Amino acid sequence: MVPAFKRILLKLSGEALMGGQNYGIDTKVAEAVAREIKAVQQLGVEVAIVVGGGNIFRGVSKSAGNMDRGSADYIGMLATVMNAVVLQDALEKLNVFTRVMSAVDIPQLAEPFIRRRAERHLEKGRVVIFAAGTGNPYFTTDSAAALRALEIKAEVILKATKVDGIYTSDPMIDLDAEKYDKITYQEVLEKQLKVMDASAISLCMDNNLPIMVFNMTDSGNIIKAVCGDLSIGTMVTLESHSQTA
Image 1 (tube, rainbow, N blue to C red):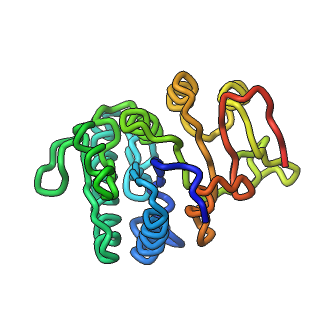
Image 2: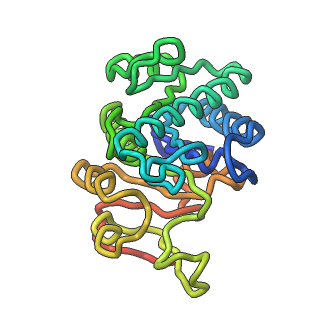
């Protein structure tokens, strides 16, 4: 297989690491993801990852209750660090050199995020996992993914979800929903499609950074996404036309 990109940023939701559980981390899912990441790296692709924390705590969730939003978001950042360390452990058991870089200073667990150091790790063939979002409350890990991808000069954001792309409406509710093969950033914003939050989409649009949304629960899809296989997902670009499957 021939990769379509040299350097990628893989956005993993915390929920994706739950597997069939209602909460927490399914280590078997983490191991499966790690195996695919190793296979991608063996294609010569430089891999950076932003991991969410929704499987443990989300600042805007019901579990946050009446907690101050800033405090709740910081707890969510800590959840992403936990997920990052789990993923690092799974990767290193496969002999993949990995670095966790955190936007919140936790020296016992992770390096501080320094852009040039992150790029150097990637150049040396290490997988870099970015944790703690942007380090600021009120910003999602989607925004962190867009920001980090631009900082490290990634060629694409691969957003791994539980849905095989972007649809005209929620396919779990609307059986007539149609899947897009390609769609523009502007259409995503205008139609309020729940792909990434608006600030992340706008940041990608302003810098012409493509986003591919795909289902990571099917084995082999991360490799297919890296190779540019649009059959498994939807590509979001600046192109002026949309196309439904």
